[in-house]
Length: 345
Ligand code: TLP
Image (tube, rainbow, N blue to C red; front, side):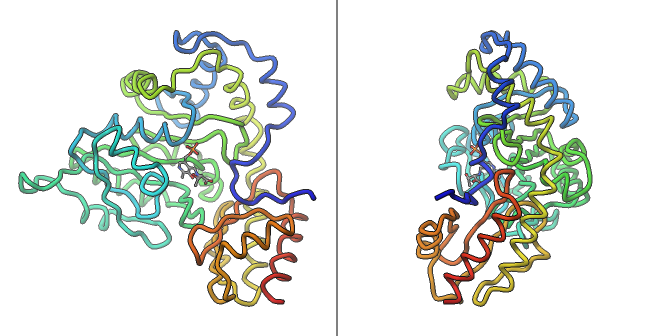
């Protein structure tokens, strides 16, 4: 049975062009900063994000954690959104690596604003109150259904934070999806932040790797932190080559993923017992509530798998489906038919 894999956009297989580029990549020892392909990828990422410098890291998690360490000191706090990846899915790494605590704030559809962020900041507070060191935002917001943060809101939060001497980081794992939804450039989205992380291995389809970008001094420091975390790699140009192809060929096809997610959401909204507002689906992530079907997400996951569709429950009530270039519109229609058959029987 040919599976339809909607668990994540991390499941994509490298394209033919990526595989060819990997096979032919010019390489060197990247710990000596001598890998020409990595250097090219880093230059390209800096250019795309509008920052002075960029660094190739093995994963989005490592990228986020390096940036938290750059911007904080032990015993301080990071303000972020309650459903953010850093808060929920990075294994408490920031406590372990940076010695910080995280202060989650709930945003409507994942969207914070300066008023909410400001209310959570501890600035010039009593000496026994944990001081805030930085703000970390996520755009697009994965677990808030791929929602995007308008530029004006990010600008206001970052300006407010800067005025208080706080640092800002953007988890832009899917910043290219956000740039399409916001009809703007990646550089514009990254502009107000001190650092940004984006992933090559999600919607862009590269097999491995993420980038962090910021000013030259911060990225120089980030090189040491990457080594400390075991992320200094050697002839890693074989991976960077796929990343360069991903940056070249994939942003152009992301609108198809968004259209497929929209079709999926509209179809799901018409199935009895499923709750989703298609208007809130802005990128390639579709989260829907199945509680009125009487099934739990683990039950539905098993039933879907038996019929060749892979998807994850993010809690007992809500399923997440993510579109990517290995899922065609035809597969979306098949998926809708299968869910209808299970849920409405
Ligand atoms: N997201 C994964 C899972 O970990 C949930 C997925 O399938 O969506 N930031 C954001 C916003 C992410 O969505 C992810 C991965 C990361 C960071 C971490 O990236 P990796 O997996 O490369 O460490």
